[in-house]
Image (cartoon, rainbow, N blue to C red; front, side, top):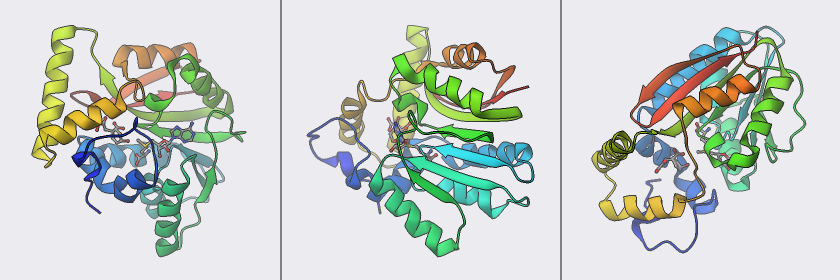
Length: 236
Ligand SMILES: C[S@@+](CC[C@H](N)C(=O)[O-])C[C@H]1O[C@@H](n2cnc3c(N)ncnc32)[C@H](O)[C@@H]1O
Ligand SMILES: O=C(O)C(=O)C[C@]1(C(=O)O)C=C[C@@H](O)C=C1
């Protein structure tokens, strides 16, 4: 279904509710530059680090698009687990899992409180930015602690620049991208207002510093377009 959520006056802050879940796949494709490519890179690196008998978690898995794409090319016996606290997102996910006869395990839970088992890959694509800054690093630390040695953390984020002029140019470029995807200026402004204080982006450097403080030995930016980036952090 086509995303027209912000075509009318907004009544509340951005929330992952039924209205958003119903159009979410279209929303992401048209709102995240190179979404498909970032997902393909996520899959490539996830598969490379997922051993036989391993475990992969996708936090904020939404409609399970990334997990299903990974499962399609999975050639080892490994457990794929998706976690999200939005019931309506998981409803869409379950529908897709049924169509593909998938073995992915879905958990409706808060990623801040979930009791993680030992894992080889954690993914948080466009999810950390919705976790309040005072507790964001606590979550990353928990993921690091649950990772087996040699495990990886792959995450994608909207990012900002510490340089004011560059930051404005990045945002202008992003809004032009959205216009080219068919969103009107009105829809773009309505969504910007709804996301204020809900989606809180860090700079690329802040993201790297955060994972380094949590103990990751190496962090690489594997994709960046304007104000969107995908990272991989390695636990040695
Ligand atoms: C932008 S979407 C993620 C998109 C998805 N990873 C993808 O690449 O298609 C963020 C997701 O995180 C979920 N989320 C946000 N905070 C959460 C929390 N504390 N616990 C569990 N899920 C959360 C939302 O419900 C939403 O589905
Ligand atoms: O539309 C925007 O302004 C966005 O930042 C895109 C974005 C994201 O980056 O997570 C914001 C909310 C939705 O979850 C989908 C995509």
